[in-house]
Length: 85
Image (tube, rainbow, N blue to C red; front, top):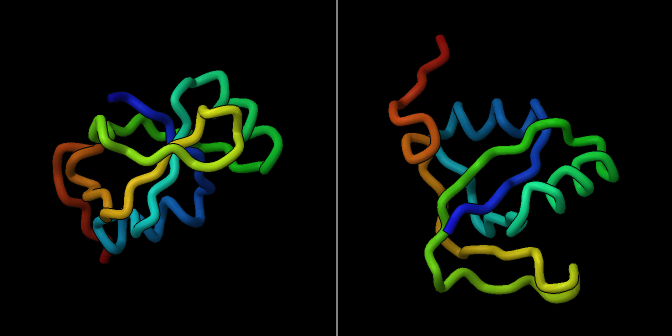
């Protein structure tokens, strides 16, 4: 399923350096929910991820927030590995 992960530029840099988003990886079911959360938290970056159908529903959040307990490899997001140096 397609979900939307809200993050900051600082966290995105860490994701790219480590090659993965460390668990728990949280995301929203709809882009509208992700946009609202982005505005509320000041985190301007929204990443489109693919979660398995068995992602766990996060308590509260009207059933729109999900998470997985596995790390999310960045090559799944960008299709290649990045290196900074």
